[in-house]
Amino acid sequence: MAVTTGMIGRGFYNRNSAPQWAAINYVLPWIVEAASGMDFADPPATVGLADFGCSEGGNSIAVMTTLVAACKEHTTRPIQTIHSDLPTNDFSELFKRLRPEGRSVFGEAVQSAAVGGSMYDQLLPPRSVHFATTFNAIGFLGARPLDRLPGYILPNGPSRLRGVGAVAEAEHAAFEQQAARDLEAFLTARSAELVPGGKLLVEVFGAGAEHRTCDGIYDVLNDALLAHVSDGTISRNVYETFYQPVYFRTLDELTAPVTAPQAQCAGLFRMERVESYEVPVPFVEDYQGSGDVDVYANAFTNFLRAFTEPVLRLHLGHDPDPSTVVTSIYDHIKGLLRANPERYPFHYVAHAMLLTRIG
Image (cartoon, rainbow, N blue to C red; front, side, top):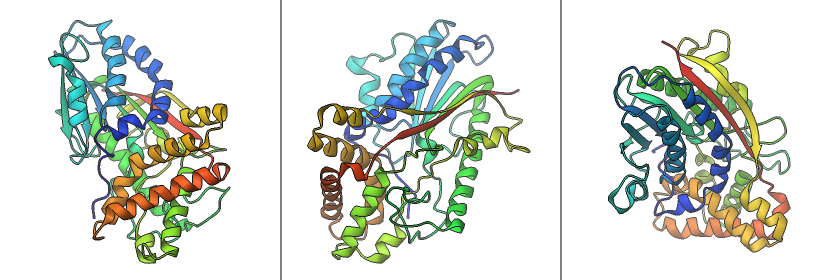
């Protein structure tokens, strides 16, 4: 079974990724400041800017718009933006947005390209990238370390508030180790692609001291799946072998490959800046202001569906009519959120680190 696939396409992810954008927008000033201190005088002649995990491109293009403008303040060299995601990603929306009306969305002297592949592999030529970014994608695992996770649908386990389900310590450790291997592979691949002095900005959803981004969103998905086990729509075996291949790191886990004693990537990068933060979630803010639970439940469900449905469909591939089952699950989620919104509070905790390539 494939580990994961691209997000829901046809513009759905672009329309339902405002929380992700809030986390990205927080660190955009880091990009502008970092670009102002870069030296663009050395080869290659083209300034390479790469974003890994671009999905349909809405957020990726917005980031690149800021980055291109920042680079143009300091160089007149031609610029290439590179947008990368899994081969199963729907790149069609990205392509339409990159060249509206037949011209680059970034203006003159900027060309763009897309690369399909795993971000845990080297995807670009050595020393061809000046600035690389990734937002949220590093949380998705490159492999399934276990065949089944019988107690819950996420390796981080349920929220303390709900407490429905459990993940054993040994099970959690397997995912923690996989996430560490993935991060080291990602950093090693990017180190090969970056020019000496090149920058790498890594942002990802995570787990903080008080809140975790996974709480609420995976609790409601887990409850909906268990309801479908109870009514016989899906089997207990399907539930126990399905899990989301996503890991929510602590800040220490994110920085460990660079800063921990005997860190694997300490000789590749210098840590410039690191921060853990929480951003307001637009549909939560709107609900607190309006009290409209129907609008809230719909927005929450669509946000969750944009990145969880593709993995769920992969797992239900044997079902003769997976679309009916999938629709039923997300309709149930919407009903749970409408009936008891307080049961599934959602906080968006993010971690970010800015690195410079040594060498």
